[in-house]
Length: 65
Image (cartoon, rainbow, N blue to C red):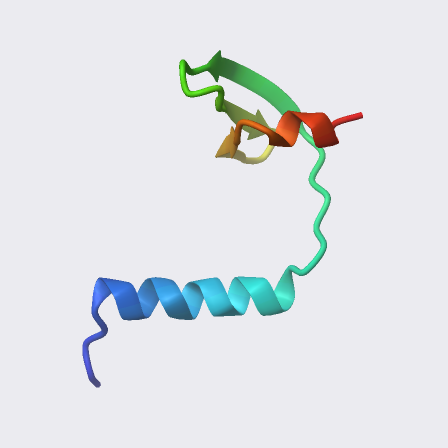
C-alpha cells in the first residue's frame, strides 16, 4: 500500500465530501461563540450525540435569516 501525503489525503477527503454533501443543512445548538477581530465567528455546533467546531466567515452573516 502506498502512503499518501497529507495533501493527497485531504484532497481525497475534500472530493468525497463535495460529492456526497452538495447541499447540507445542519441543526444543532450553538455554544462557545466568539467574534474575532477579523469579523469571523467561531463556535461549537452540538446535539446530544456529537459536536463540531465551526466558523462563520465575515460577510456570510448577511445570508442568515
